[in-house]
Amino acid sequence: MFKMIAMFKKPEDTEKFDEYYFGTHIPLTEKIPGLQRVEVTKFAGDAPYYMMCEMYYENKAAFKEASKTEESKASGKDVMKLAGDSVTFMFGETTNG
Amino acid sequence: MFKMIAMFKKPEDTEKFDEYYFGTHIPLTEKIPGLQRVEVTKFAGDAPYYMMCEMYYENKAAFKEASKTEESKASGKDVMKLAGDSVTFMFGETTNG
Image (cartoon, rainbow over all chains, first blue to last red; front, side, top):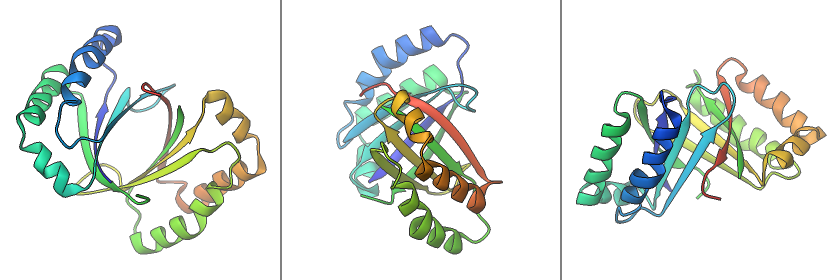
């Protein structure tokens, strides 16, 4: 599968961040057509990141199609508003299906 | 679920790395008792990492138990031999089951 991954640095106010992220941003993201699965991981201890969100698509073509939609643009705009200065995006393929 | 994540910087010889990683290291890792799933992602473009391996356990207690086994120690020793100077480990919990 093709994955888009957002890695978040620790926000100043984690409670406020989480409330917006899970209450507003994730529901927006889940509307993206073609998005098959969203997995959020909160890191423990002294990890270099606070949280990671993995968004799964069937393949790269499906991701590219999804990116053209209003829902994808709305989610992208929203995450930049929330964490534009503290998020790193990575893209990749799973090697085992 | 509880996840242990290994993030790999790009190795000098990616072909040699991949051959050992998928041919020897992953089979060793898959023997760890309690390990429920392994997902490897290869990053595209100019990502800060080459590859990521996510190892899923039912919960933190299951991971701790697994870590005591010979299979886990063998896998840990093997990855350090392969990539001791270029791997970062992170640990975390998924927020959605």
